Length: 530
Image 1 (cartoon, rainbow, N blue to C red):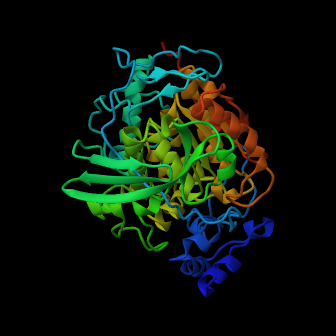
Image 2 (image 1 turned 60 degrees about the vertical axis):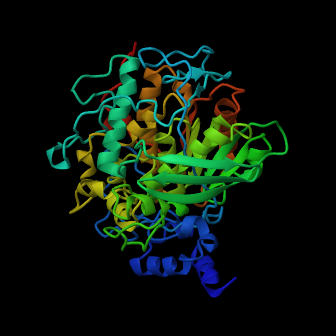
Image 3 (image 1 turned 90 degrees about the horizontal axis):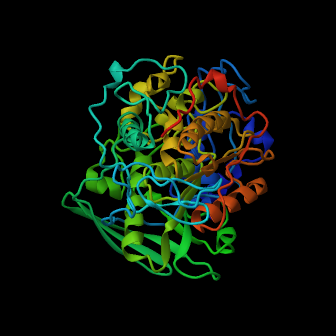
């Protein structure tokens, strides 16, 4: 181990004392300098400023405002605490791919949402696809089931008005509320376009994207051509010794699966290590905003493309799924794919799952701002990573988000016409399991829980409320460490959505200090969709 590695290891502290200790900007940059170039040596995911692995602003000089009502988590206001990721670094080693997706099977003529033939408490309804498996999980075959829906011109940020509570996800752009499941399919596309325009940047889906590649028992090789340019990257594959091909697979964003490689393999689930940093590389913390992004996605679309790193990583994952679908169906089961990651890689896993309907199960762990936690709530929880911390930390979010960043002791995220609960809802009827740790105050578990219970309303409206689960009822352990309390719920979701051998659990297990008062943030309920 070289000096830089030793230095980063010694600075990364775990335990309750570390979580209560504010990080100064100078200390954060020292830690970053020790990690640059040796990501795998740094605890959690290349700890930078603010949270061990999510890179939020370290100091929170103005202090995050206390939640106006409801239980706020404990912790020092205005200081993002340091928490070492005991699971180690997340410097991935994976790939990505793409190729034309075949037409979805069994799509109803209206393009609406059809009921699952299996029914049952775990039954799901397929957004235009055929439903299979005992859990009724949808067999998705295209990246975006709502791509044929037309979305009108979205207003510029300056024309948006403040919405203090979480906006009603069922309210369409025309001012009318969604009344049918068929209408929700196109409302999904409106939310997608709003997320691209205001938060994450556009995910390129132009017809000129041509992806080819191969899938072997050990590697996925991806070749993408678009806009007259081409890129290549790879992903490592680890197959289980039990079961038969094609195998369901868990995509790990990063080269270390927080959920545990052996835990997947023992259940007959393959592991795919997707190296997101091949597609987009993080720059210098607190100094990257406004500078071009490097990486293979940006080699095609330009370093100043509006897509932030999270969207660039999601695009690369979709290209990998294209290759699996086109060339690897004899090895990997395209209908049994999950994605997971922790901290910044949890943000990536969440974005990948939201923006690709071929992902059957999305499992973000402790992602903080940019993942499932509601943005307008993160700005108000004392000690949590506000939007300005993470926006100014690294280029995960698009430059498009600038008008909504916390500034002058004011939350501007309230101007967003959507929030992350709507993105959670976009995953329906597919599966999502959100894993959080309320003891890590800066990660904003209460904001994640509130987004989850708001997103649950979409699952309820579609008749698939069992397809979303949430777990934050864990002991006080380090950020990104594996919590044994997660195991049962993880296994149940894997059985339901990846292996199609069980019912979706639909459980919400909330830890102390990990929730807020619902009425303070949600003033609407799910409509009875026909």
